[in-house]
Amino acid sequence: GLDAVAGMPPEQRIDGVRFARPLLGVARADTTRICGDLGLTWWDDPTNGDGVAADEPLPASFPLRSRVRHTLLPQLSAFAGRDMTAMLADGAALARRDMDLLERLTDDVFARSVRIEDDGGGGMRAFIDARSLAAEDAALRFRVVARTLAICAPGSGRRHVEAVEALVSGWHGQRGVRLPRKRTANRQKHVIEVCQDVTHANRRHRA
Image 1: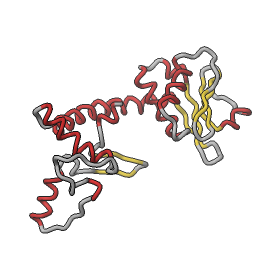
Image 2: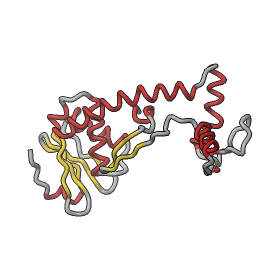
Image 3: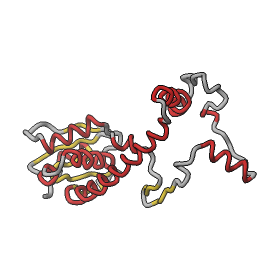
Image 4: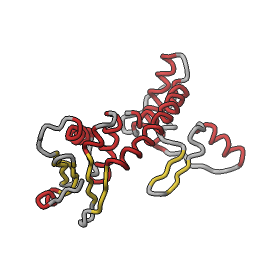
């Protein structure tokens, strides 16, 4: 998806903690040279495969990220006749700009359509206003549902998100959706509740 294309952001907040990556756009060769010029010592990650000749592919035992950087990107650059690393970085920057807008829009829709509560058992539950969310664009519906499941049913994948989103946009009285961590998503009238299975027996929906 767009998040994967955008790659790692230069700055983000996670649980209120600010993470900044000022050297994200600096090549490793440049950081190595800078350290050498300043007399600083550094550590090279052995999983980068620096000991393998540039014209030899990294064995499958190396991490995928290392094999992509060492083997695939040079082949793509040779095939295209241009620096694919720089082109991918430029594309990621454009995607990140679009993703930032989508995230702001998602924040707004989430605030209007979803209520999160402590379920009293060490987890979280959610109440989704299906009528409100159904009026939004499909891309925003998907992102709002994905964010809700990330909070209330960690481990949910694309098929879970799509099934819950169908309770919003394709409602025809279908059964609820079973989710990871013994959670389910059930719709009654215009409210979708995401919670532990056992709580549905005595749930009380609130508009």
